Image (cartoon, rainbow, N blue to C red; front, side, top):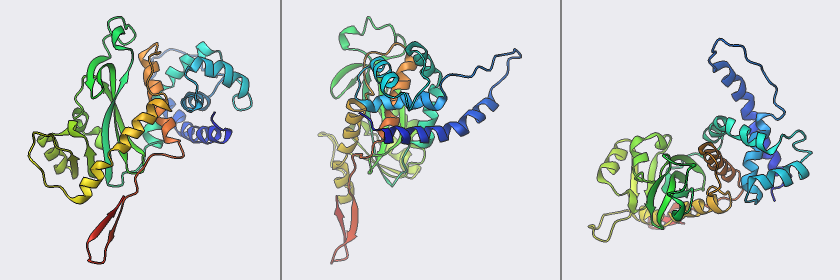
Length: 303
């Protein structure tokens, strides 16, 4: 189970964010000329977001069981005034915007010049239930990954050598892995070398990123001619498994993927909350990379 110290750490970070967000958000709201009641909610925005995030680290598989039998019974000192389960699920989706902004402004790492990019499928149902799925009808699409066909979405993430998430994009399942890189929004604040698998091979994409000061490094297919590559790039390309490990932790520890969603808003809330929960992990997968000159004056690599 998650410790009280970790709950306090998450709540403090969110509360500091909400102190800035709430007045700025209220000031920008457009008026419709009608009078509205300014209701005071029983639970604050900070409490709602905190419970949403700590569920991803709690080890519980279902949020209903976690909220009814753990939060309301064993966390009364941390959350003394809770609402009903049905009301809380409504508040979760109502606070989806501050959840995404908190992730984008407070939970992303800093680029070190060594970055890795990859996509992972986020399934919303089993393949045999694709035709009967109504929750994501017209939204989710069928795509293909290295593990076979799936129905749902793709999570594209960029991480650094410390295992920190630098940026992310959610697309439909049939979108090509290279498309988010062409749009450029996911590459904000990214510089140096970007390591990817063979699915990102594209001369035009590599040239476009090179013009923006970003070096795209990928492996080569069996039917391609050999490409000259520095020893540094060869070694770091082999370390690309770090992003596979992060994707595995997002799904198996932070529960980014499951098939119990009842709305698209619930899906986005769960996925973003899992990314935030990962950012609060004390130990993240990383690589040790160091360049030192040897006795001959040449650079030696240590990974």
